[in-house]
Image (cartoon, rainbow, N blue to C red; front, top):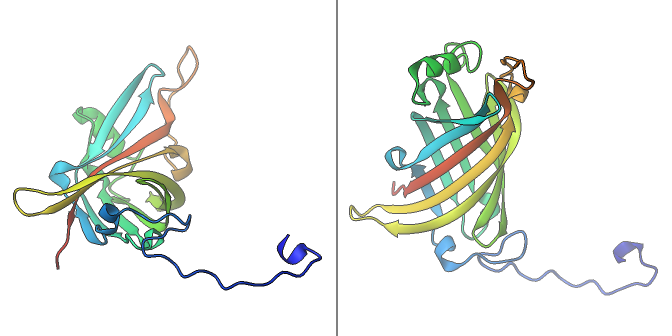
Length: 211
């Protein structure tokens, strides 16, 4: 109805926003609200990885070990939460040196010309419970395209060294050819040597920044 209805209706003032309310109108719990602040990824206890089907019959997994991060979580207004990540692609590790050399070469990342890939968030939405959707710009080989990450909050704790930690699990699947990673080989039986679909996995142990 609204402005398209024929009968006039009284216009009421919007209710004041509740502390911790999200764009979907559901307030975050106290544990999530308490996470408000700046965080960084603890690399020794985190994993930024990927998996891709190989030769149509198996899955190759790898990770990036060198990256910088800046995270901000807003427990009162989750839409204000944001993340920035810079990954040095030459740090890729699949457990096979020859394969790693191929991945960072001109056929794939071309690390000499494009040493970094980046993620810069553009919006965050609380999906309900402890699940969020973060949209951002992923840049690989100077090509920038939007991606959606599903992010699940796993919990928080103060460790024996006095650091406040929060755990998050993030996933998304991309088509690598959209970023110019088009190298492949055809198989005689049909299909390709390397799948175009790549699953990205972010197993994050974040530490609160105090300064």
